[in-house]
Image (cartoon, rainbow, N blue to C red; front, top):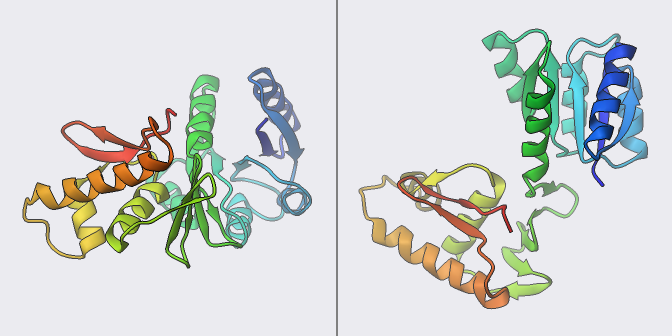
Length: 227
């Protein structure tokens, strides 16, 4: 069961959020200040943090900054300030998403669900990426499925790494070529198609019938989180 840390100083809103999330199958923990939230982060493990921006003492932005020093846990900000300057700053500080106050319950639940479905998260201690049963060792340039090593070329590894770092994002062939090859994409679809095909074949060899990389027709490729 996913456990969500709710950081909200208004006791009524905090209780309402605990009740709402509990009704939808989440376990919750409540914090009423930034200091209490950071203490709970040290004591336990959370699947997601719901963090109010306007907190007494440490602000939500300060708490977010400290969380990001040691954790890649998804953080969804709750904020009454939805101007562009504020939201851009929150994203730059490492927020995964934000919801404006007053919020719609269904929208909040949907945004939480999206973040929890993004299965690829950095393991900051071991320098690994995870998506479903794939593990990428970023230092050793190795890939594993269920503990079995996948022999990938450097280009295949970099393609998979890029897709796993942003599992919900659709990458165009232009995106892939310019990031992985480091040059200007001149419309040579064959280079990308061949590498994607080989990568899929190698992953499928260790997990037959599993589609890890999804083709989004007319756009590009993304990780398939519907497995």
